[in-house]
Length: 193
Length: 193
DNA sequence: GTCTATATTTGGATAGAC
DNA sequence: GTCTATCCAAATATAGAC
Image 1 (cartoon, rainbow over the protein chains, first blue to last red):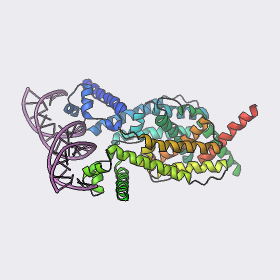
Image 2 (cartoon, rainbow over the protein chains, first blue to last red):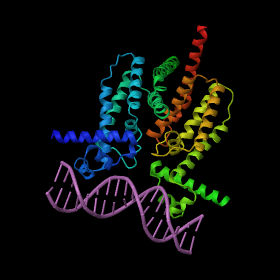
Image 3 (spheres, chains in turn yellow, green, orange, blue):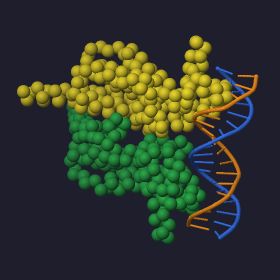
Image 4 (cartoon, rainbow over the protein chains, first blue to last red):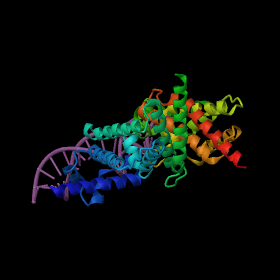
């Protein structure tokens, strides 16, 4: 039924709003029901438990990530594409800190994403790894360093300048720094042969 | 009274243990009381509220950071000292993720550190800024980039390889990369004169 | 300072009528 | 599917005896 789907979507949307206002852990079924104009028990016609709602949110977030990533217009030039990847990741995470928290930091006690929802994330991660490889980033250490840079900018931005751009605006420069480091390493290795 | 101080310390220690086991938000006064062999209401002889306990934990964590930082043996060589700072920060944060969360991410709904406790953190931050300046790091953008690197390594380590060293071990290489970037910038600017 | 007893609130979740 | 009524558990916090 399309009707049912619509209601499910409405509930999930309302849950996001509540979490953005009061934190991920602050979600309560009473408030959620009130927000969508239901009595609390009625929610159980759509979700088996509170964690099932978190799971739906998780799946939605992971799908958003995958969809947005698939839209990226890569150029084939490694540095340009790395900047694109970095900018995408940092923007995606900082534009909705609660989503970032749910997807990548798991701060809800007792909640673990279901296998189905987690699979969406895994698929995305694999896609990202392929992107990295296409851009010439195949060394795991260097991939880890690059992801750390993205996470660090994201985290500082969210924690210390929410809504601003004090750290996000450093993304391109950070990527150039990283790219240059990559090239230096490669040259040294080539020379040793 | 020394007796009282000792009990207060025992309560705070027990609170840390519980938080490490069940997450910062999972702390309950019932469990805490049980852990120190009291009935829940007795805790109120030592702390006015649950948040007062969080506040004591926050103050303790901030003091630990300040004390450990003051012990660092700087050499005067910029690169060496930056590596030292990075290693210190990442180690301090990853060795107790819950403390990191409490001090730098504020994920306890409704808790804000008191002015007194927050002042300890502010003092530390200023000390760190002075250290940066002594090492030649005076550009705010570059300080921000350096702290983002530290936070990124920390965050990835905690989220994706807890207890391991997959990201912490990249600290020195990351610092070298950053240092080289700093020098390049400086040279370019010098050349332009 | 510590206890028992209890107030009060707020959760998630279920039963069963309609 | 939605409601009312309710259960049950857990939480912070207070009152007052000892």
